[in-house]
View 1: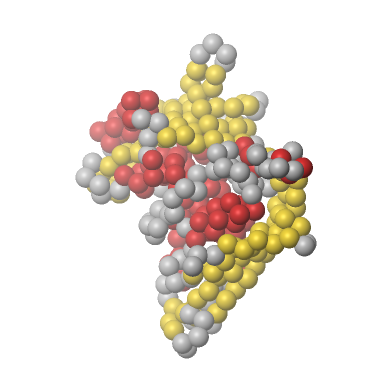
View 2: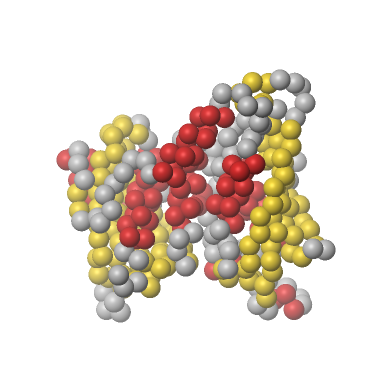
Length: 297
């Protein structure tokens, strides 16, 4: 299959009742230099859910189809301000039902060479909205999407099963347990306005160290599995690995300083953790001698 350098993805989801019968829609188009040509489009009825869940499911389905068509870079337009700001790291994900969908969307985005996400008004998203409404009316899938809509893929199911398992816990003492894990990625950045050499393009091997805390142990005697917190962290670091950070949201609008990087990773990671686990701090190492720590007071 011939790779597609860049495509534009419009997504929309809606619920008649919130929660109520819901539908999702997307269009995937490419600019041939003269006009936008449609690669594929789809709408699907997804049963009873909320507007926010529908918005995320529309995005996930659209990204799956973009990857199936070998799209290398993706520009996303959506009319859900909540979804856009959560994915850009401007809002925290607090709803337990949204967290696995957020994680799934972030994981899918790491499969593209680059991506952008923009909030648009509903009238600019009319085609995706119409497909979602057609699907709700028909209680069926419409369009020509090469990847059929599936309510749960393996990534979502794994996260949901993990969250359900952590709910079977009990407090065995008044103390707490703190876990610390590390990951790293290689990336370049340039600090706009910096009065020195760091204003020019340069790279780091960024070491990311995170600590989480909990008081409840599960039936095995584990507060939170090391492999789970490592997987949570890797979902985040993968989106920055071997990238020019200044092109990756939200660092396309704010400087990719260690301070901002630590805060953004903190907010993204906090959105993925189960309720009984507290994120203590995120440390960013620019070098073996330079460490910055972000924590909430």
